[in-house]
Image (cartoon, rainbow, N blue to C red; front, side):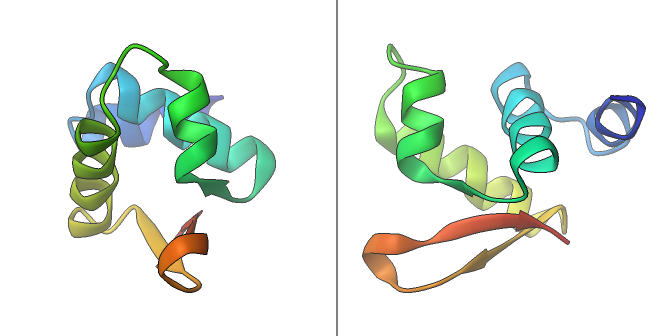
Amino acid sequence: MIRADVLTREKQLNERQAKALRFILEHETMGINDYVRLYRGVSRKTLQRDLKDMIEKGLVAREGKTRSFVYRVR
C-alpha cells in the first residue's frame, strides 16, 4: 500500500503503528483487541500509547464508547 508507506515515512511511525495503519486502511476500522492480536507479545498499554500518538499526529480518529472504541483513518 503506497499510501500507508508514504504516511509512515511522513509521520515517522514505528513498525507497530505502520502495521496498524495498514490494517485500518484495509479493514476501515480497528479496535484495540485487533491491535493486541497483531502484537501478542507487546503490552496493551504500549499499544494504547501507539494509537494515542497516531491520534495526536492526526492520522486516525477514535470513535465509540470507552470499551468499544474503534480507530479510523482521518
